[in-house]
Image 1: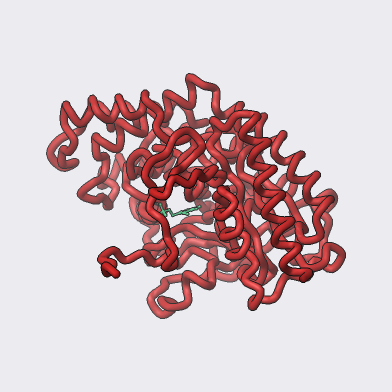
Image 2: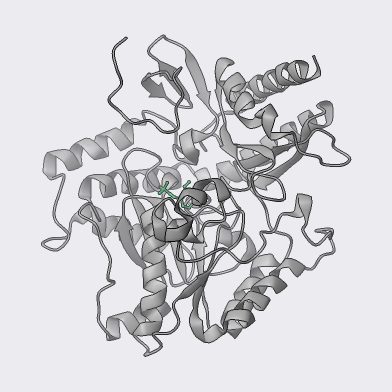
Length: 445
Ligand code: PLP
């Protein structure tokens, strides 16, 4: 056996090599075809091998692939920042380009802290976050993340702990019904602010729909409106982590638009370049940039590959493609169709407890008993069994955490490219329902 040289922490020994991708499909070197129903890590939102994007990347490579951000800017990076300001709501008119969602969150944290420093309020440094959240793997972003499994080895290095419950309506920690709860869970944010003192807090950060740490947890009516109000009353910035939800995934450019709520800072990544190149962004509002521009002028962050022209050209081409093909609307429409079909499947199976989400970001939570919502035991490894079984059936889905302790349940995300056709959606549901039947048969046996 030839030895491995590449460290692949998320792959077991049976991993395959992908030879190529086309549309919503990936093909491995054995010729097996997989429907990419999770867009990889909820990333490849326009599918694989789109000629317009490849052309734009080729043109940029022919012109120039790299300029150092302390020496030059580039048409590609300038054009991308302008486009992001045009397609996002309100005064989110400033873009800081980085390479990953984690870096976008780190930059958001630094920007929030700097905003208050520039106004001679250096004590406002703390950032409040929620349990059942994932904001990134770097230590700053991880310290905000309510993801026990990813935190535990580094606990002593993490600056803060999440403090607020997520809006987990299927298992409401307050025992309330989302139809009548009046988003009571937002009270916890106010309590957390009072406990620490607003004079020490710079920002509150949240994923509009919780992704990997909660399988598309969707807030109850009025939730973000109340969160915005609390942030305003205590002079705390609202950071929306739209790394997974942004750029059309939920049917709008930003998921926050569903509730008409304008964040002060937004982190984007993943779908921004739909996987064609590594790029992410921190969007900053005019209001937050103003004191920084009037003060030290620069945001104290950056990486060698920040604003990389090659990645920026890919991202700009993706944003044009999404606009030209009305993919935000497509996500909303197809999401409704997929949701209905999955809810139908839920009724037929014994193990699907909840189907939730918006647009083409749909979470499915599994339980042993629908009435009691009892999760499967850890020893059952249900999520990884479903992922593996689906892959054997030629379907790729994404694992997510669930359960009241944020890790004691089983869930997956289904988030296909926004370009998926009606026939492909039908095929997705057929493959998924075959997978669930096979798993049920195994469990009952
Ligand atoms: N924020 C959210 C909501 C995410 O889903 C992720 C990644 O899954 C991140 C941040 C971190 O992004 P990256 O893996 O690109 O560093």
